[in-house]
Image 1: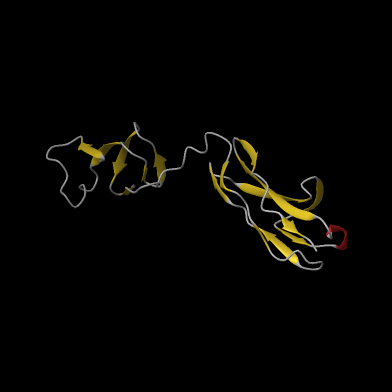
Image 2: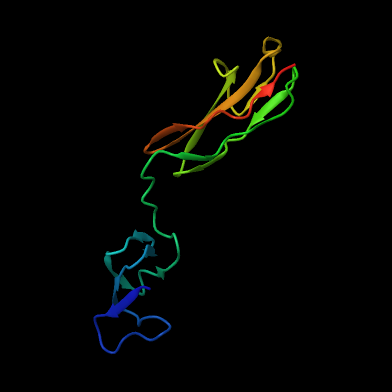
Length: 154
């Protein structure tokens, strides 16, 4: 609930406040006042001719992540392990507001063989398995997910 009080008597009409009237607003949850983000505890003055109060969930800027991303669902590789076929790696699901993702393909979990969310199976991959590791990054750091499912190449 947002508390609104005026500097004048009587209080403003229910449809809004009167022209040229100053309204003091104590912010109890994130809102936007006159296009400016306001946080709980802020006190602002709004003038009907200059500002419009918009109240809504999540309308103020986020405080940002408090820790590096955390993987909640491991990435998954789809496709056929056949030379010339393209494998696709999903990013999985993450918490912690990731801002970017990187992909690293591995042969037998050891040798780096590619980057990006897609990998085209090569002759050298025959007899081995391919996995994908996704790393998510936010303002607090980076986290690598556990390796994806392995795709055997025949």
